[in-house]
Length: 115
Length: 292
Image 1 (tube, each protein chain N blue to C red):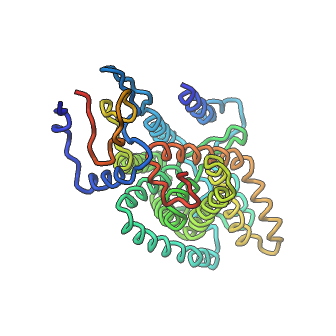
Image 2 (tube, chains in turn blue, yellow; image 1 turned 120 degrees about the vertical axis):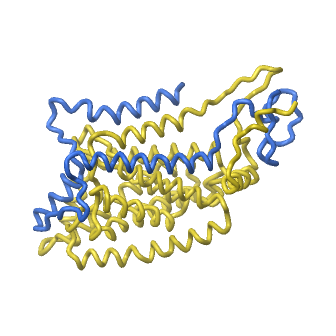
Image 3 (cartoon, rainbow over the protein chains, first blue to last red; image 1 turned 180 degrees about the vertical axis):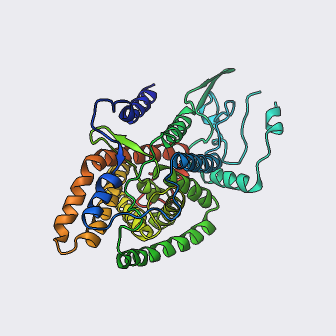
């Protein structure tokens, strides 16, 4: 419960940015625009257009969506390999009341299931 | 009674099964299954598995926000060609060393490649994740190199950061090919080595691992932006003072990166806490007893 509240608070702080922009002078530009490119232009080195310019209309949103989907799929795939989903009925003998133990499941590759 | 579900369970690929068996055999401390308590025939599940899913949704949701962010990456053409080449030359040995490290460590542990794949995807997602900072009215992104360096080492973090930065510069109008070397040095080299170094030193000093992870995440983020400031100042200060320009650029980053660095510290500590509770054996290679 405490963990969920913390996560919700964290998400709320993150998402409060775009939601509270009305009436503010904030442009929500990236710091590359507000810092890096500003200093570069002052020094006479304006940024070039990208070689593959996807920054045209909604094209950039599309490629970001693709990148997010591909990255999310890869992350999810490897996550499941490394952190297999927990089975509801798999039990750890050490946690069974009255059990003499015998080592946690997974040591010998055998899982104990409730009948 | 033999569980019929065990027989009808979906078959896993040999490679995947090998990794999972290897992980099981390494696990000497914790039960990888759910923390369930059996009282008679009643089962009570103590911990749910929804937190990772929530984080996944959060990351995907933030990536899908309709405001593509451009942040620490130095844009195409900003650096003069001599400086661009110099930063490529600086980055190259680190990338080569990281590739050799991947080969060596993959031979030692079969679960290492999946871990690198997961960390690489996470670094890619995190480094194109726009986070609005209400106090500054701008957006920027964390780097993810602090936690990556703790989990897979600084050399491999350079490799995964290089891949992420190359994809972003090619297809996401994020960074640039001429500035790729400089971006690798700031995010993949400085961020990774500072994160790894801070964590190692903090653990050797006896600082609790969660505090060490927080410091590593926060300082690796700040180191990335400090290096970016230096790269820009070195190339663009012209006849002026390098120190003055470096300080000006660094100060301009502060309103956005100060809170984001703290956020990255929490992210780093949270991820390490999760890995430590679910798969502590993945932290066996972490320096200075990260799994302890």
